[in-house]
Image (cartoon, rainbow, N blue to C red; front, side, top):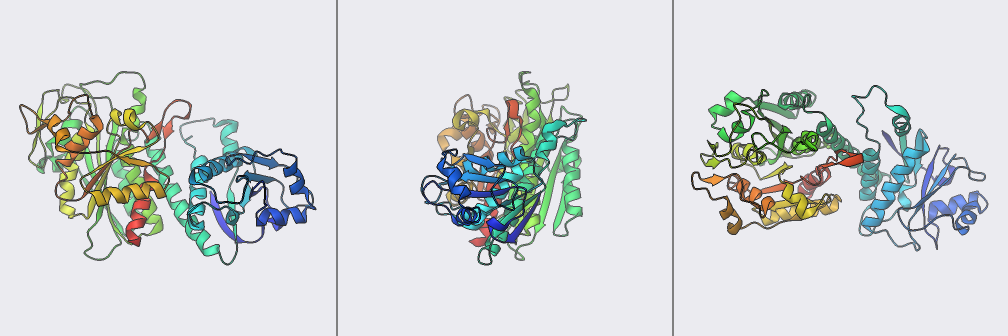
Length: 499
């Protein structure tokens, strides 16, 4: 999608579709100018009552009297001219994107400066609007021979013009740059998540990381193979891939664009490219969705692409612990004991609790970067879906300032997270009669005990864990990866620059 910032007034735009916001009681500047140039046509339409002014509703006018634009899309912004709430604005952007998909025009112009959101800048409004359009127009059709009429319709829009003036142009441009980078990064994460397991395996992810570094001089990629990981003592990670013909790998993408000597931020993604559950085999229903078990890794790729696009002045390490969890004669068994890179021994009581087994060795490896902080992202527990549903990402941390930074970023990015507690009483559920700890803590508080397990390997630095089991993908008719929490993580990094 091409986005352009243009200085110009709405009523003079020669465009296939002009988009403006309207209130019931007072017309914003663009609507007032259009009403004047069309001899009261717009106010006459609104007086008929065809538009519900509740935010999230709209009215498409296919012909506007004496106007240079072909269509006029009216976005409802409430009864009065007070700013929208974030929830109302989210409904507005969602409706706008849906209307653009339905209208089948190749380009559209948006009077962005007439939209106001309580407590938010024009830059933020622009960014969120661009993100919403990028998200709505994403398609995953590369394995379809006949994409059909719906795909052709969705692909008809090629260009979006954001109307500004001399005073607001820079702010709109800044929001556009962030929105495009985040939208593109999120869609990259969605594509990786949507790819089938027979194509997107650990080696595929490693090749993607190498290709990314090849095109960016500030990025260096290193791949640890199974022999190298064995030499480092990563018995926990390697126990997960033991049953698969696909070799595991640890991917390290090192972006060095911050101050010399500044400690890096590490983002670590769970990259289980397909999860059968291993010997603790999952039920067959919806097992195809276990290709999404690498969405944590996918989000790391999305963030790394975004920070490259934005050229953020930070040092960031994007790590991916990639493996495939399969049952075979070589697979780990319930009751097996493995030794992690840290030296801690782990009793594997359930081979379907494998994400924490690959992450714990990666967390130990991350110590060599002497990081400022480490954030891991993982589709880790079904218990998180029980606790928070499919709307909110679970957050747990050993460092309250880090947790607060992530929560603030989630709110600013409209990519919600919620912090769950941690404590010794939960850690005790991981006690084992035969090893230093077990990989599961029983049926209660599954999300928390999983985080407590990881925390045992993240004692050397500030650490946070994002459980995205409920937010990384959708099932049913809208089945597909969501690309979350790319917006939250990019905002977290942007905030680090400003602090």
